[in-house]
Length: 588
Image 1: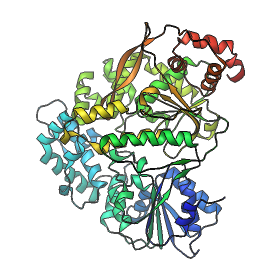
Image 2 (image 1 turned 180 degrees about the vertical axis):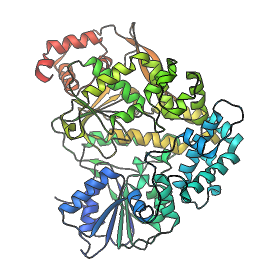
Image 3 (image 1 turned 135 degrees about the horizontal axis):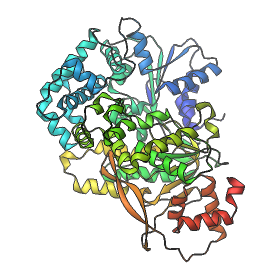
Image 4 (image 1 turned 90 degrees about the vertical axis):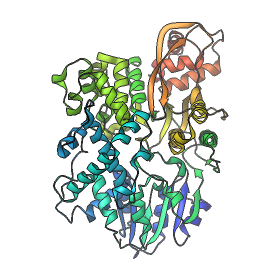
């Protein structure tokens, strides 16, 4: 493989360095070459972002016969140093609010389910502390992480009690009275001030490191290399920080992407230029040297589980001939919240079938209104999404989910799926030949509205910029082409054969059929917005160019409804043209 000049400079560097690498720039290859160029007697630690990246990196180092490199994740390293040397037992799943309420004997103030709301905030406070670099809970202000006004009011009222009970629960873990969490032993590892015996430490995906792990990394005597992409930071909600900005090391760059061509690179840069609306100047360049090839893998990417599930439902109901689909990650996770409540529990609550509810928190709710009140006070986005799906599909949910699961194929057969579905977070590190974005990403219009209408003290700029990063990460998952809704295309964008903008015509006569779009209600919460479609046939005749465009969209699995919006025609007209061109027979 021919290395670029940027890669050669990194490999030849000395001392502590940080590498800002654009999407698809071969950063893993660069880091491996960097390690390979060091003496084979060097002790090298490679810190991967997650288990799947760890396994892939281990395989690549093994192929190069580099036995002097140890590959770990932050948690696997902490587990080896803390858990294996103690009598601690790690909890298999995260603590749930009802468990915490019972363990601490929490008492409310007469408000409905106040003990569960308190427990939820205690769990969030503990997560905030365990991922921080602070030594004491009291050094943090948990209110800094709470942005919903109703949730802030609740936390303000009970702040001292929440803080005290957070320390009590941590103390119970520390003494071994209860099972510890993964966050806890990572924090224990950081507080032990470990001295790692390595000559080099290579820290991948540094833009999403927790302050706790960054603290461990920076305090080591080894030569340190941290690599990532400033604009791919999308885990701020897990208290991640952009370590590339915090590490005072010499700067190096990987600015050439071998994944996609310059047209996609230009679109990605235009998306990032939205940050200028928030007052952040953009000093960023990206060169696209990828060569578009044959479309094999196709994916639908969404900002939220809700947006993705709705798109998957449309896909399996509209495309009856589809035999296989694949969801990145565990398919069941799309119908479960982190706390364990399932979409079926919420449905049973809605139907007043309490005897069928399995989750103990949901079981305590008398009706859906009480659950919505809990959601507002805890700012629980995932449960909120479940309620929105319920309002959209009601009792059709079990039948629809059953159909989706029947068409879902196993991990080892993923490449044979007619369509892959994923949220941006789950697609991190992945790439596909063609992608279609769901209309639930932040838009230029929404950013401007936030900047104009939100009071300065309530404006969360870091969260706003992370939403822009999500759009950038989504765009850069493609190798060949992208279908992107017109509403989320930046104001100025380069038109090309690789970028297909899906437009919605609004000047025609409204149809009786209604479509449901995701409309932003809060920067991290999306609600369903009922909007009428427009179907009067356009007078434009089908041309060879339009037929070619329709064929490309059909082959890439774009929904008939989205094609109708794009061409400004009815679904019936699109289906008739598909039949006329015999696309089902040729590509079905």
